[in-house]
Length: 309
Image 1 (cartoon, one colour):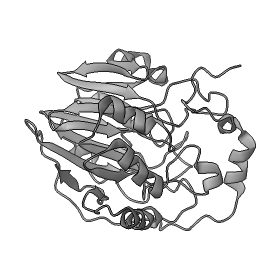
Image 2 (cartoon, helix red, strand yellow):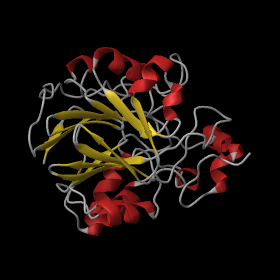
Image 3 (spheres, rainbow, N blue to C red):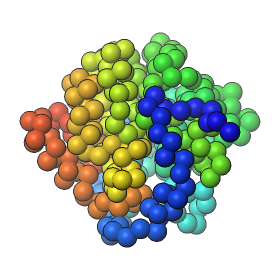
C-alpha cells in the first residue's frame, strides 16, 4: 500500500525495518547519567503582553512561547518515559524544567507529529483537563485522542494557515515521518509551525532532517525572529541523518532560515540515540565557532530557563 503522506524529498529507506533493528541492537551507545539535577527556577509569568516575546525551555521539544497575551506550548511532554507503555522505554534524565503545576494558563498546544517523544497522550489529556486549551497539528493526528477531545483539535495540511485569537499560524513541511507502531508509518502528517507573532515570525519544526524545506519556508515566511531548532538525537549518522539534523546541520538550517536568533532544543532529556548527553551542546559550540556565529545568537539554555527577545 502506498503511503498516505511523503516528504518533499522522499527516502524509501525510512520504511526499512531491518535498519531499525540494526540500530537497536548495535553497539556504541554512550552512557547517560541516571538523573541530572537542574537548579530550581521561578515559574513563568502568567502572561506576556504586546510585542514582547518570551520562550521558556521546559525539556526535549517542549517550549513555552509567550507573546501577545497568549501562552503556547510545543510538543508537551511531562511523563517519566516516552514509550507506548509506562513501565519501559526511554526514561527522562531530569524532571521538566517547569513543573506541570507551575504552567501558566495554556491557550494553545502545537503538536508536530505523533512519535512518542513528541505526542505524549497522558500529558495532552492532563492539559485538556486542567487548561482551556486548543490544539493544532497535522492531518490525521487528532485521531489518536479520545473522541471527546477531538473537537478541540485543528488538523492542518502543509502550507495551510489558520488564525488563533488573531495570531496567524502555519503548518509547514519538515523532513521526517510519522508512526506509533510498526504498521502505520506515513499515515498521519508530520510538520512544523510558523507563528506570525507581533515580535516577528517564530519557527518550530519539531523533528526534522536537513533538507530544502528550510529555504522554502524562509522564502514564504522569513526571515525569522526566532527558530527553535533540534540539535540532539543524531547518532549514528548512517541511520539518523534521514530524520534528525545534527548540530552542524542545525547551524546550516539557522542560516537557511535567515533567523535573527535560534534556541537549541531536543537534547539532554531522553536517551534516544547513541551520542553522549553533552555531545549536542559541545558539537553546537564547535559548529558555531566554525560558522563565526555568536553563542548568544544561537543559544542553548537549561530546562526551566527563559529567553526574552
